[in-house]
Length: 258
Image (cartoon, rainbow, N blue to C red):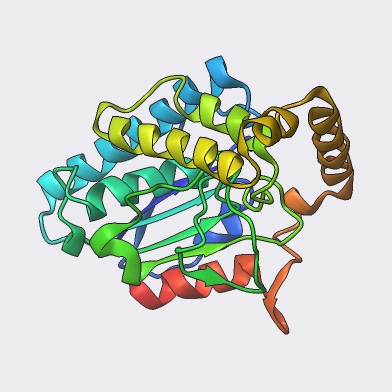
């Protein structure tokens, strides 16, 4: 098995994924996907280009391995921005938009994915929102049964309340700043979904209120509280079930695939 691990923001090397991917066995090779990570999903001009680089590098490594060893199974894991990229690769494979076939993917585990959807296979306590960049509307396709996501309920990267429209719009603009051609239809659908939700909650007047300066300030305050809480970087201690941390679960999942 070939594990592609895409580290997250501020990770100098494997970071949190080091514990996820260590000791997976002699029949498993691990590669950490290099790219220029950036801090926030709403740094639009920077974030989209940075994630596109991670996606391209991951697909390149996978295709090179499969060309050399066609029978190899690919596994994907990522944290934070790395989960965003790994999830996009998995989605493209699962929905037939990539040269790699879905059956060549052994499994996927994402931690703090900014594009988490309520339809994804969540491991751990309920998270009622969605990723700050909006969900992948095509989902994981045929990879879904083998794809899992972990998100701490207080982590605004992967669990933004649906009524936080300012945050969702900014996240959407970041995701589309360097668009993937095969996902243009998804981008259009996500924009329509955000606008439709605002309108159905009370008409045009309410839509303007949801995008007001007051609402923006409120969400900035909440985001600052989130940063101070440290919940985004706490997955080494965050438990998905009693006695099992997110990192431990992800490691056990990958180890069971090899």
